[in-house]
Image 1 (cartoon, rainbow, N blue to C red):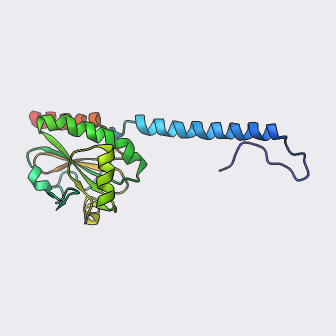
Image 2 (cartoon, rainbow, N blue to C red):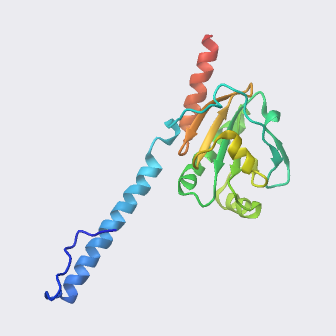
Image 3 (cartoon, one colour):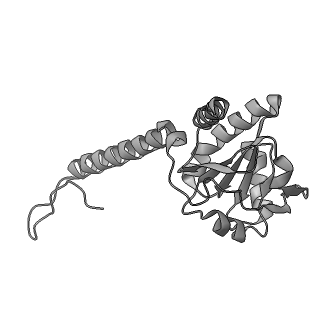
Length: 199
């Protein structure tokens, strides 16, 4: 990465020690400010409103049937009658870490009403690593971390994180790319529920 400091011509006088320290400090402050700005943008951007087209939308959700990290069998068809947010993520993915508290908030809110659930599908990771990550970061929902490569292909996942909202009838109704917010998912559910009520 290039800096704004001028290059030193051959044979020119070198800056004093204090001059070098000031230049180094200025560069460090600038780099730190840019990094802080990126973190703020990731944390505050309306990620839940970012949707993209998907050939899955309007069709039945591809089947997910596998053991989760606790050894329990998960079948997406068992969740008919409620909304399901299918979340593809990785523990090493920065935006996934930003998104995670929003998934926790969404899950906890709907656990009380029983009208919506989350299932997470880890991308190419050891179940033990994923289980430990959830123990550290929270989240009480099924997490698939074994034999999951085919699921990402079936859902056409492009990059992480990516989520698909499945309606109570099993139809994929929305695709979120780049992370979600609890409010963003709720807004989509409310809008779709209102449309269904009007029809």
